[in-house]
Length: 482
Image (cartoon, rainbow, N blue to C red; front, side):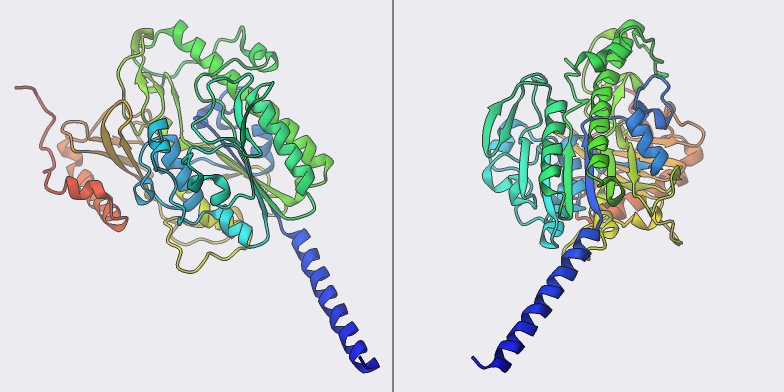
């Protein structure tokens, strides 16, 4: 090779190296993301949302240093379909997951369709290291595995969780193992280990806690002792047994404390690794929760607990079931202590994650969400939509097909394929949803206009239940018996 050719080759190599180095430097500046999703955590269980009985200093820290959303909602008030919406921007009916996946379903070919695009998948394609540590619950066959849906690495539970909070069974390196310790602590240990191993590249870590899902315990003494002698405030609801409900509240808040304590460990490690100021932390849950609210224990498929006795299913879309905690800490962008009042949904997460990280949405990918990173950036936003929609087709231990439209003042819940259950609440004057005005002729025009908007939304997502119930007339009044 001539000297000139060698010189040209050397210059080309230097140019390529310089370009690669510049790209690596730019990559190092790209913000990281940690998306924390808890399981069955009501927004009301956090100090920053006004609960004086809760002990959540680390969740409160996120709110003090970031943005707290006061009107965040889930697309479905139960885990599997809500988690699918969180990852894809699609409603449960659009991906074939409309209730939580039981063991039979998840073992017989039901799960998140492999062709569905998730935001971890898009981030992975754009140079991010991705990991899911914790709960999946979107199918347990190989084609539904998290590593087939955008995650480089998975450690955790493919099913709904583990009933053994001590010495849980989890998947580690592709094998199911029983580990010593509490699941929340072990999950955090693994998250810290993964962060240490991947801190030199832009990363997106999903931490999906098992807590505070039933059973609430056992939890470490550090989490139970603060509530041992506490006297929690009960929600305003009829027929509650005070002793029974307060015992549930204490156990539930102890489980929430377990998450919070581990968040403190996570934040300390981020500080130690000097990652805290270049990492967006998004904290939320998969759905809301009731511990006595509306005399219900559970979420959208909760049970009636009047008199301290667990009764039948109470399929519902009460505020306590559909409203979520949502807190985002984004250093250098979000002003500390920001409160965002606009209505958002976890269906918006796909668009928002990509928006926060300046990753373009893939062409041709269908999703229903809005990018609320604009709200976090405090950019002028004209005509932010106020309508929030939700759906739930209960088929585990009961039957119900619910659709919801919620505006700043009104909430309409339509129960398809059944009579007498529809609801209309005036949230401004009845925030506890105690007076159903669906059959009130004084607000009939409001009800009918909301129904039109709800039907239009259902048509836009090709909602199958709409076709099944297309000819059902709007009821003139509640059933009165024979």
